[in-house]
Length: 386
Image (spheres, one colour):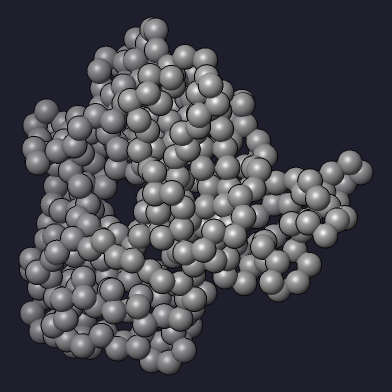
C-alpha cells in the first residue's frame, strides 16, 4: 500500500505534544506501490475527515514549486508529470521533529489527485491539489453496464465483489469484519449513472456497518462501534498539558432523534419487516420516557431484507444519533492520529464539563505552525451498555 503505514502516535510523540515542539510535514506521490517523489508541503494544507460524508477523507494540499522554470519542475506539463490527475496518489503526513533531527510522521490518508490549481504569482508558483480517498476513485469508475447482486448474497461478499469489479486503476486491499447478513430475496440492480461507492456504503449501512477507506488506503467494513466499549484516546483537561485552546459547546434538539424506525418494504419483501431502536436509558436526557418525549427518525428500504437486518440498521443508526443533543467543537494542538469513532474525555469547568465523554464525528487538521485540529464530537453519556 502507498505510504509508511505509521498511523499511531508513539509514547514519545504524545509526551512531546503537550509542550513546545517542532512540527514536521511531508507529502509523497505514489503510482500504485511505487514512491515517485517526496514533496515539501506548505502551511495552508489541510486534511478533513467526516463520518457523515460518503467520501470520508479529503485534502487540500498546497506546495510551492522550488524548481519552477527548470527541467526539475514539479508543475504538471505532460500526462506523465507527477501531479497530473491521471492516477497518481498523494500521501500526506503530519508529525514532530525531535531534538537531534529525528522525525515521527503520522500518515493521514491516501488521496487521489483530482484537481490541480496552478497559481503563477509574482514571487512564487503555488500548486494546490484537492483530492479524496479511494472512495472517489470508485465513484469515478462508475458502472459501465447493469450490475446485479444475486439474491441471498452475503453482504460483505457482495460489497467486496462490487468494488473489485470497478476499473479504478488501483490495487485495493480489504479489511472486512464478518457478517451473516445477506442481500434481499430479489436481485439488487444498479444502472450506469449510479454511484458505486454510494451504493456500497448504503448496502453496508443497511446491515449496521460502516464502509470507508482508512489512512493507509485499505477498504474497511466493520460494525458501527458502541463508544462505551472503547478506551479513551485522549483527555482534554484543563491545566498543565491541556492541548485544547478553544471549546464550543452546543445543546440542541434540532437534529437529535431518540426513536429510530427502519422498515423493510418493496419488491421482494412479501411481509413488511420493521426494526425499532430507542433511547431506553432512564439516566439519559433523551430518554423516551422522560420530558424529552419522542423524536422519530424514519426510513424504509428494500435493502432491509428481513427483521434482523432492519433491526441491525435501527440499532446502528441509534448509535449514530445518541448524544446529538449535546455536541462540542474543539480547537487544539493537532494530534494527527485522531480518527472518527475515537472517544475523548473533556474537563472544562467554565463550560460545565467534568470528565465528560464524547465520540469524534469529524475533524479538520491544519499543517502550519499555527494550524490546529478542529474537531466535533457527540456526548456519549446516554449510550446503552455495550
